[in-house]
Image (cartoon, rainbow, N blue to C red; front, side, top):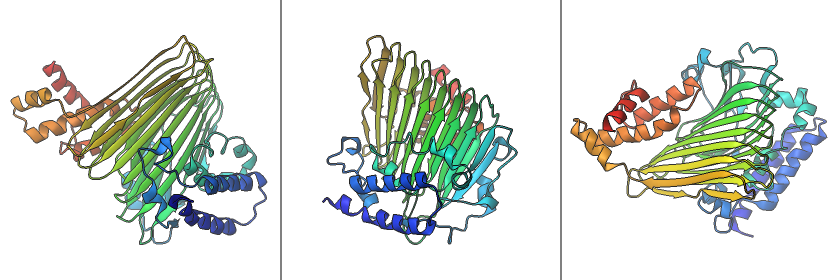
Length: 457
């Protein structure tokens, strides 16, 4: 048995205490789901980067060797004033706040939701409407392929359940805010989000993951998105965990006929981050757009794995991930476009672009196509390199310093992703964060960069 397999015992012990604390609730399907998940994790253990191709570029031994305890609210100390600074306020239809993986009602803002929109904690939904959740929960995120999904499934309890009835149109986004307050001992939380949109729904939701303090902790998140026929879903994820945090997340989306799914992902914090985003275009004429940005420094590591699974014909997809790496940071992008035999007329494009701001930063980019149909249009590409010195020279000729020129061009490089985000508070806050990281004015706008670009051309 490898060392990684032995170190899974910490989480198995956590599960024993977790199961004992829950007691018996008379929901056999849920108990079976949890036990199946933890049994799969026990069988598989942590992935070994020396043997598992999907984890070859990310070594999870630093996660496996830490004796994490299940997180609790004890000593969290998150104040309402802190949450208000993070809140979207009136720009969100509602906000649910979770601290150390536990829902905190006094920090949340349920809001007045229109008929047909249900946004509740997963724990309350499991108690009140278990049969409805049984149709979806754990049916899409695959515990066989990913041991971290199996581990999360073993601890399914807290998180969010979002259900939108047929034809519902939600004007403002739903905001889910997950805050971890690092304590003296390493702790782990397993948030779960289940988003179900019936036919014809139009809605957006945001997942924000933030850390307080400098302690070691582990967030192991799973999100399942089920979009009905003709649904239009916009999902944003912002990860700004603590400097010593580990963040592993899987998002599994299943798209019905003529539905649309747009995902925007921003990875900014954490010591080690792994994001798996899998989208199955299961209905004819479904479409998917995956955009992502990574801005890291120091010794941070971010690994983005994506899968666009084209199962039906006439399904377009588009993917753009941009990375800015400095210091001794490392990035990974492994994107796969899978076109199944029945998926004729597929039109898919994938692009990964990286700026390296130091000689010690490392990027591994692996775009891939796997095509089993003969009437398709699929392209993929990847570029990695330093800042364009011609552009630097142009800005310096206009009186801008060397350092400021590099920062400005890095900001503009990532702004190509942020400008595509339609959820205003997410786009605005990301641009402000990027400007602050690059020492630029907070009121800098994308249009200002556009004018510089036009002048250069």
